[in-house]
Length: 251
Length: 318
Image 1 (cartoon, rainbow over the protein chains, first blue to last red):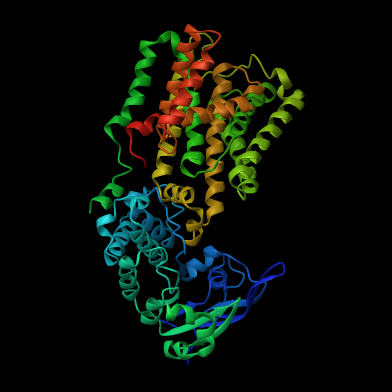
Image 2 (cartoon, chains in turn yellow, brown; image 1 turned 180 degrees about the vertical axis):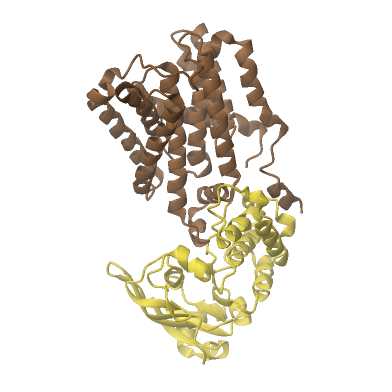
């Protein structure tokens, strides 16, 4: 097997006596479609925060293509190609959809600190943002303030911002959370349309979405990896059914 | 796409942007007896504009911006008093450098915090400076400040005019114009756009890889330098400086001016300061003892019915 693009070794995180991540050895392969599932409080978002550098691990390391990122702050990891979306929208609500994406693209291109040139004259930034909105079918909303959009479309803007960073690894934290089921196909289509070369890790409670999307599934319980395997293996795993899927599949 | 075109044209000059400058130039000829008033107004606009950069654009909540106004005011005052450095333009640069350095240093420490903590720390920074100026009376004149300062004529030609403020008015206006051009350039740049992003959602800004704190500290230092220039103009125009230059009254006053006009929209400082000054002047004439009541009522009205300030009533949010 080739080297994974993203890997953790013995990752631990504690807040006082509370252990939220225990000895996590996790591998995300190149171009993977990998799902992370588990009951609430299992530590899924904590793992994302450890991978992106929002949290520093108490022990263990995070490697991107073999390079140790453990001590790198969030901004540096973004520059190395790790992007994320949030479980609860974190958008520039007062700004237009286009500007939301432009800010991300400008940071990636290193334009964010430029004081002399008007942002409006960065045609490279604006053109790329426009193209990106096109691929996510958001072009009709480009001029609207994000705060005015329906929630489902705001979720798409979350993904658009992350894609504006041209990530090699994309971490999607419950991308369909809070969307009425009638609209969840919007997110499904967007995820299905993601460029193949991006390795995607998706946290999701919607098992339809997980089993349609994922080539590999990791189950977390109580801050530790409980099981990992192909969707078929996970669906057939009795223990997983007991701790998590039982309720989710029977429902 | 119209959204893209709008974004690409946002920094273009609009016809109405000439209005405040035409009005200011016209006022020079129309109200020759009010140029002292006009000078204070112009200085307040510059001060409010500097606050708008951090408060309106970067979303840094500060109640201590007079610290930098005072730093600039005392810099030129002390240079003139003790070092005989009375040349006005270089005095402005010195004031900008001192205030900017204080902004850089205090911003580096303070901007790790946000919200109420930040508010209190900005207030404390200002109180420390004020108390410092009070205690170092050998340098600053202490409680009495430094009255009767002398400054060299502008460009060696235009003497400061203690009665009619003609030179001071034109001088302040030209400095305001230069500073405004700088701020306008900044807020329309990618840097300015990223400040807006930090204001709107700092968590997301971290997640797109922006060096958030460095940007904030830089914006804070630039804003402090501009406030320092405003303070320096104040000392030069009025030929004195005292503790009122860096007190809470001044810090709160400029905040009120900016909220009144509308923050985060460049021209809010112009509208807010003008409305505040004219209102204060008219009310003080009509009701010498109770004019503050009138100002208070207007503020309540704005807070209740015009949440985005006076400009917010006619201008779409940026």
